[in-house]
Length: 211
Image 1: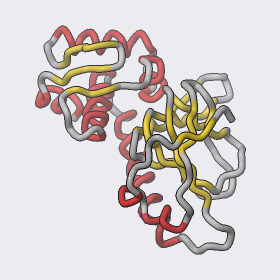
Image 2 (image 1 turned 135 degrees about the vertical axis):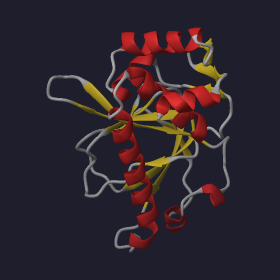
Image 3 (image 1 turned 180 degrees about the horizontal axis):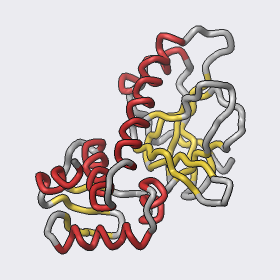
Protein backbone atom coordinates (compact mmCIF):
# COMPACT_ATOMS: atom_id res chain seq x y z
CA UNK A 1 0.00 0.00 0.00
CA UNK A 2 1.51 3.31 -1.08
CA UNK A 3 0.30 5.77 1.49
CA UNK A 4 1.46 8.29 3.99
CA UNK A 5 -0.57 10.27 6.48
CA UNK A 6 -1.44 13.92 6.15
CA UNK A 7 -3.16 16.22 8.59
CA UNK A 8 -3.62 19.45 6.66
CA UNK A 9 -7.27 18.70 5.92
CA UNK A 10 -9.50 18.01 8.89
CA UNK A 11 -13.18 18.11 7.83
CA UNK A 12 -15.87 18.17 10.46
CA UNK A 13 -17.06 14.83 11.74
CA UNK A 14 -20.62 16.11 11.44
CA UNK A 15 -20.44 15.28 7.71
CA UNK A 16 -19.53 11.65 8.37
CA UNK A 17 -21.94 8.69 8.60
CA UNK A 18 -23.08 7.77 12.08
CA UNK A 19 -21.13 4.51 11.97
CA UNK A 20 -17.89 6.51 12.09
CA UNK A 21 -18.87 7.96 15.47
CA UNK A 22 -18.04 4.53 16.91
CA UNK A 23 -14.44 4.69 15.67
CA UNK A 24 -11.65 7.07 16.71
CA UNK A 25 -10.86 9.90 14.30
CA UNK A 26 -8.05 8.79 12.00
CA UNK A 27 -5.42 10.81 10.14
CA UNK A 28 -5.72 11.19 6.39
CA UNK A 29 -3.78 8.68 4.30
CA UNK A 30 -2.56 9.99 0.96
CA UNK A 31 -2.56 7.72 -2.10
CA UNK A 32 -0.78 8.85 -5.31
CA UNK A 33 -2.58 8.51 -8.63
CA UNK A 34 -2.96 4.85 -9.63
CA UNK A 35 -2.03 3.42 -6.23
CA UNK A 36 -3.99 0.60 -4.62
CA UNK A 37 -6.06 1.27 -1.50
CA UNK A 38 -7.11 -2.34 -1.08
CA UNK A 39 -7.17 -5.43 -3.27
CA UNK A 40 -9.75 -8.05 -4.14
CA UNK A 41 -9.42 -10.93 -1.68
CA UNK A 42 -7.92 -8.84 1.11
CA UNK A 43 -9.51 -8.87 4.55
CA UNK A 44 -12.35 -6.37 4.88
CA UNK A 45 -13.59 -4.70 8.06
CA UNK A 46 -12.69 -1.03 7.57
CA UNK A 47 -14.66 1.85 6.12
CA UNK A 48 -13.18 4.59 3.98
CA UNK A 49 -14.14 8.21 3.40
CA UNK A 50 -12.72 10.24 0.52
CA UNK A 51 -11.46 13.58 1.85
CA UNK A 52 -10.16 14.82 -1.51
CA UNK A 53 -9.49 13.26 -4.90
CA UNK A 54 -11.39 10.30 -6.32
CA UNK A 55 -11.45 6.49 -6.13
CA UNK A 56 -12.43 3.80 -8.63
CA UNK A 57 -13.80 0.42 -7.55
CA UNK A 58 -13.23 -2.37 -10.06
CA UNK A 59 -12.85 -6.08 -10.69
CA UNK A 60 -10.62 -7.86 -13.20
CA UNK A 61 -12.57 -10.30 -15.36
CA UNK A 62 -11.31 -13.76 -16.32
CA UNK A 63 -10.23 -12.53 -19.77
CA UNK A 64 -8.17 -9.70 -18.26
CA UNK A 65 -10.66 -6.93 -18.93
CA UNK A 66 -11.45 -4.43 -16.20
CA UNK A 67 -15.00 -3.67 -15.08
CA UNK A 68 -15.39 -0.53 -12.98
CA UNK A 69 -18.40 -0.75 -10.68
CA UNK A 70 -18.23 2.65 -8.97
CA UNK A 71 -16.48 5.98 -8.61
CA UNK A 72 -16.28 7.74 -5.26
CA UNK A 73 -15.72 11.47 -4.89
CA UNK A 74 -14.83 13.75 -1.98
CA UNK A 75 -17.19 13.27 0.97
CA UNK A 76 -18.34 9.82 -0.13
CA UNK A 77 -17.73 6.54 1.67
CA UNK A 78 -16.79 3.10 0.36
CA UNK A 79 -15.41 -0.26 1.48
CA UNK A 80 -18.63 -1.70 2.89
CA UNK A 81 -18.70 -5.47 2.32
CA UNK A 82 -21.28 -8.12 3.18
CA UNK A 83 -18.61 -10.55 4.41
CA UNK A 84 -15.01 -10.56 5.63
CA UNK A 85 -13.15 -10.11 2.33
CA UNK A 86 -13.12 -7.47 -0.39
CA UNK A 87 -14.71 -8.51 -3.67
CA UNK A 88 -13.25 -5.58 -5.63
CA UNK A 89 -10.10 -3.50 -5.94
CA UNK A 90 -10.08 0.12 -4.77
CA UNK A 91 -7.60 2.46 -6.45
CA UNK A 92 -6.86 6.19 -6.31
CA UNK A 93 -7.66 7.89 -9.63
CA UNK A 94 -5.58 10.96 -8.86
CA UNK A 95 -3.78 12.17 -5.74
CA UNK A 96 -6.36 11.16 -3.14
CA UNK A 97 -6.76 11.61 0.60
CA UNK A 98 -8.68 8.87 2.41
CA UNK A 99 -9.62 8.55 6.05
CA UNK A 100 -9.76 4.91 7.19
CA UNK A 101 -12.05 3.86 10.03
CA UNK A 102 -11.70 0.49 11.74
CA UNK A 103 -14.51 -0.63 14.02
CA UNK A 104 -13.55 -2.27 17.31
CA UNK A 105 -13.94 -6.05 17.37
CA UNK A 106 -17.25 -7.14 18.88
CA UNK A 107 -19.00 -3.78 18.39
CA UNK A 108 -22.62 -4.07 17.25
CA UNK A 109 -22.91 -1.62 14.37
CA UNK A 110 -25.77 -3.23 12.45
CA UNK A 111 -28.07 -0.24 12.94
CA UNK A 112 -25.44 2.22 11.76
CA UNK A 113 -24.48 0.04 8.77
CA UNK A 114 -28.00 -0.15 7.37
CA UNK A 115 -27.99 3.34 5.76
CA UNK A 116 -24.60 2.62 4.14
CA UNK A 117 -25.83 -0.72 2.82
CA UNK A 118 -29.03 0.78 1.42
CA UNK A 119 -27.18 3.66 -0.21
CA UNK A 120 -24.74 1.24 -1.82
CA UNK A 121 -27.61 -0.93 -3.07
CA UNK A 122 -29.39 2.07 -4.55
CA UNK A 123 -26.28 3.24 -6.38
CA UNK A 124 -25.65 -0.30 -7.71
CA UNK A 125 -29.23 -0.44 -9.00
CA UNK A 126 -28.84 2.95 -10.68
CA UNK A 127 -25.65 1.74 -12.36
CA UNK A 128 -27.48 -1.31 -13.71
CA UNK A 129 -30.17 0.99 -15.14
CA UNK A 130 -27.48 3.04 -16.89
CA UNK A 131 -25.89 -0.09 -18.36
CA UNK A 132 -29.34 -1.10 -19.59
CA UNK A 133 -29.61 1.99 -21.78
CA UNK A 134 -29.88 1.20 -25.47
CA UNK A 135 -27.14 3.44 -26.81
CA UNK A 136 -23.91 5.14 -25.84
CA UNK A 137 -25.33 8.68 -25.84
CA UNK A 138 -27.96 7.70 -23.26
CA UNK A 139 -25.35 6.05 -21.05
CA UNK A 140 -22.94 8.98 -21.12
CA UNK A 141 -25.73 11.53 -20.66
CA UNK A 142 -26.92 9.64 -17.57
CA UNK A 143 -23.34 9.46 -16.30
CA UNK A 144 -22.81 13.22 -16.71
CA UNK A 145 -26.11 14.01 -14.98
CA UNK A 146 -25.10 11.76 -12.07
CA UNK A 147 -21.66 13.37 -11.79
CA UNK A 148 -23.21 16.85 -11.85
CA UNK A 149 -25.70 15.96 -9.10
CA UNK A 150 -22.94 14.50 -6.91
CA UNK A 151 -20.98 17.74 -7.28
CA UNK A 152 -23.80 19.97 -6.12
CA UNK A 153 -25.64 20.44 -9.40
CA UNK A 154 -23.12 22.89 -10.81
CA UNK A 155 -22.89 23.51 -14.55
CA UNK A 156 -19.14 22.92 -14.50
CA UNK A 157 -18.40 19.27 -13.77
CA UNK A 158 -15.01 17.86 -12.89
CA UNK A 159 -14.25 14.42 -14.33
CA UNK A 160 -11.20 13.07 -12.49
CA UNK A 161 -11.44 9.78 -14.34
CA UNK A 162 -10.07 9.16 -17.85
CA UNK A 163 -12.13 8.38 -20.94
CA UNK A 164 -10.96 4.77 -20.56
CA UNK A 165 -12.28 4.72 -16.98
CA UNK A 166 -15.63 6.02 -18.17
CA UNK A 167 -15.71 3.34 -20.87
CA UNK A 168 -14.92 0.57 -18.37
CA UNK A 169 -17.71 1.91 -16.14
CA UNK A 170 -20.32 2.18 -18.88
CA UNK A 171 -19.38 -0.87 -20.95
CA UNK A 172 -18.13 1.21 -23.88
CA UNK A 173 -14.85 1.49 -25.77
CA UNK A 174 -12.66 4.54 -25.25
CA UNK A 175 -13.24 5.44 -28.92
CA UNK A 176 -17.01 5.44 -28.39
CA UNK A 177 -16.72 7.58 -25.26
CA UNK A 178 -14.56 10.15 -27.06
CA UNK A 179 -16.90 10.17 -30.06
CA UNK A 180 -19.98 10.79 -27.89
CA UNK A 181 -18.26 13.62 -25.99
CA UNK A 182 -17.40 15.23 -29.33
CA UNK A 183 -20.96 14.78 -30.57
CA UNK A 184 -22.43 16.36 -27.42
CA UNK A 185 -20.00 19.25 -27.85
CA UNK A 186 -20.93 19.71 -31.53
CA UNK A 187 -24.63 19.78 -30.59
CA UNK A 188 -23.91 22.50 -28.04
CA UNK A 189 -25.08 20.34 -25.14
CA UNK A 190 -21.72 20.46 -23.35
CA UNK A 191 -18.53 22.47 -23.58
CA UNK A 192 -15.20 20.68 -23.18
CA UNK A 193 -13.19 22.95 -20.89
CA UNK A 194 -10.31 20.48 -20.59
CA UNK A 195 -9.70 16.73 -20.72
CA UNK A 196 -11.07 16.42 -17.16
CA UNK A 197 -13.62 19.23 -16.99
CA UNK A 198 -16.83 20.00 -18.87
CA UNK A 199 -19.57 22.60 -18.72
CA UNK A 200 -23.18 21.51 -19.15
CA UNK A 201 -24.66 24.10 -21.50
CA UNK A 202 -28.08 22.54 -22.13
CA UNK A 203 -29.15 20.80 -18.93
CA UNK A 204 -32.65 19.93 -20.18
CA UNK A 205 -31.32 18.40 -23.39
CA UNK A 206 -28.81 16.28 -21.49
CA UNK A 207 -31.52 15.18 -19.05
CA UNK A 208 -33.79 14.18 -21.93
CA UNK A 209 -31.01 12.14 -23.52
CA UNK A 210 -30.42 10.30 -20.24
CA UNK A 211 -34.03 9.11 -19.92
